[in-house]
Length: 114
Image 1 (cartoon, helix red, strand yellow):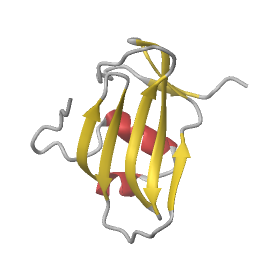
Image 2 (cartoon, one colour; image 1 turned 120 degrees about the vertical axis):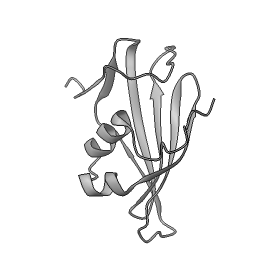
Image 3 (cartoon, one colour; image 1 turned 60 degrees about the horizontal axis):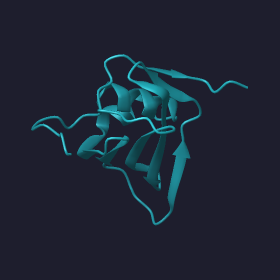
Image 4 (cartoon, helix red, strand yellow; image 1 turned 90 degrees about the horizontal axis):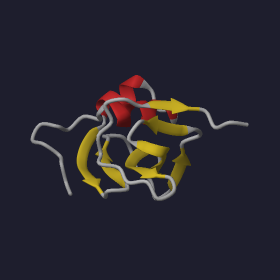
């Protein structure tokens, strides 16, 4: 199910919080443009465009911590795929057998317990 509304091209509050936690700064996140969002029922794929040089070096960064929200008992994780320094795709996924309807009115990102 694709739910990108016309004009909805900026990172939403959840995406923004994850990207900042992964080390992007406010300016980088503000300059990102959302190309697509795909909700899967157990997660979300958000594809981005950022006008900075890309390279053939693809990397990824995993969110250290867990996204908590009342509707997802086991929480969510996230991983950002990049092309050089350019964010390409943010994957948000549930843990366990939880389903997620894509809503995120209340959420927090908590550190993993040690």
